[in-house]
Length: 239
Figure 1 (cartoon, rainbow, N blue to C red):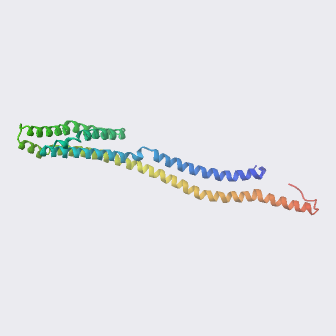
Figure 2 (spheres, rainbow, N blue to C red):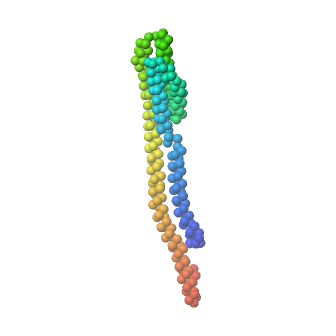
Figure 3 (cartoon, one colour):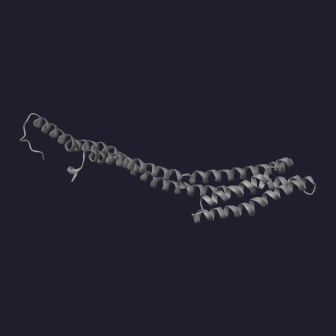
């Protein structure tokens, strides 16, 4: 069947096979790496860690500012509190969206928010109120000092930090599992590219040999036949 093809068709077939193999390899690798880049899990762990760390930083700053206010009475220290409270809620909601498919993390986040709203915020408000009562002469300094020394805010803060660390650790472990799967897929693509790099040249050699046999040999026979006919040998047969 192949012997009946014209020379141009044989050339088109030979080079077409090489181009198709190369295009398939490149397109497959491009599609796979595009999938990696657009995969949300690719950035999930990093975003969860950043949001959790940011939440912890704001909580520590709130505790330190209120403690300093309780000891000094400087009202300007309280000015950033509304902004920090909003940031805590925003980052907490962001972590919740990023880990929406994990019941374990959802429970940790719920406990963290309960601790924040039921223990930490009342502690902050109570400490501010004690200082203002001191400034108004309703309580002695010893009451304020004793409350600060009790470390209630630090205990609540430590509990929330432990919960946030558990969320981060859960997400890190999840990311490690995803990374193992991704590494296996990358290895598969590498093997595919390596196979293409090996098979491609071999196929090119095979196609060159085939083209030489199916194109150049008939041409050489045709040239020889033409020469014999030109010399007057009419006994040559044309196959």
